[in-house]
Amino acid sequence: MNGVIIVDKPAGWTSHDVVNRLRRILQQRSVGHLGTLDPLATGVLPLVTGSLTRLAQFYIASEKSYEGVIRFGFATNTYDADGEPSGEHVGTAAPGSPASESGSPAPILDLTLDILQKLASEFLGVIQQTPPPFSAKKIKGVPAYKLARRQQEVVLPPVQIEVKEFAITALEADRAHFRARVASGTYMRSIAHEMGQRLGCGAHLESLRRTAVAEFDISQAHTIQQIESKIKDCHSEPGENPRRTSPCHSEPGSRPGEEPAVSHRDGIAALFVHPRQLLPHFPSVTADEPTAARIRSGRPVNLPQLSRARQVKVFAGQTELIAIATRVAGTLFHPKIVFPPE
Image (cartoon, rainbow, N blue to C red; front, side, top):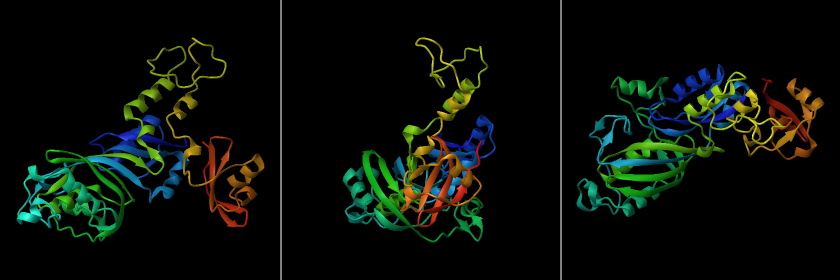
C-alpha cells in the first residue's frame, strides 16, 4: 500500500525497530521513516510505505515540536537518561542564578521556575549548538556514537540551529518540564546539557515526547498494538466474529443495527493519513484521464489553473496521489516524481 502512517513510537525502540515491525505487520518491504527519534523518545514517527517512500526528500528540513523533562543535578555522557553519569558538567553559570552569585555550583533546591525560564529564553532564535558525542553525526565517515562507544575522543564542530519556541512550563524539585518547537537538526539533549553547564550543576534530558513533525501531530498517531489489531481485524475471514473496537469500513447500504460489511483495503486505509493532507504547502490538482496518463508516462502537461505554483500535487480521483510536478515554464509542468499505482 502507498501511504503515510503515523506511529506513536514507544520508549526503548529505535526508529529502525519500528520500521521493521511495520514491515512485518503490513507485509510490505518498502517502509521508511520521515525523521529518526532517539530510543529514549516517544511520540510522532511518520512512516512512508510503497512508492510514497519517495516523499522523504520533502521532509528533510521539517519543523518538529516536543514536550519533555530535563533533570538537573548531574550530566550524562549521552546527554540523556540512557547514559552514564558524567562529572563534566561545571560551566558558566546563568546570570542571576545562585551559581553565578556564589561562584560555586548551585544547590538543586535553589533552582526556581523564574531562573529556568530566563535561561530558556537565551536559547531562542538562530544559535550555534554542539551535537552530542553519542549522535549520528559523522567524523571522517564514521558515526560519532561508534567512536564514543569505543571511548575514543569525539570532537564535533558546532552547527547552526533554530529554536522557535522553548518554554519551561513547570518545575518539580530537580525536574523541569518544557515545551519546544525547533528546526530540523536540533538536539534537545544538547540544550539540556548546556543548561546544566550554565547553571553549574549539570543536567540531562530525562524524557522526550515528539508531538509534531511537519503537518503531522500526535492526534494522528497510532500505537504499534493498535495498528496490529486493526490489520488483524480487517483481514479476518468472512464468517468470523473478531473482537473489534470499531468497524473497519461501512459499505453503502448497510442497515442500522446490522454488522457493516468490511472492505479490507478501506479498513486498512483508515490507519493512513489522507493523501490530500500531505505536503499542505503544495497546491493540488485533480487530473483527468488523458492528463493522468501523460503524467504517469513522465511527460509534461499544461496546468493553466496553477500558473503561479512552483510545485504541485497531482491526483487521479480524490485519493490517488500520482505525482509531484514542477513548473518549467508558464503553465507547463513536468512530473518530478511519479508514484506508480499499487
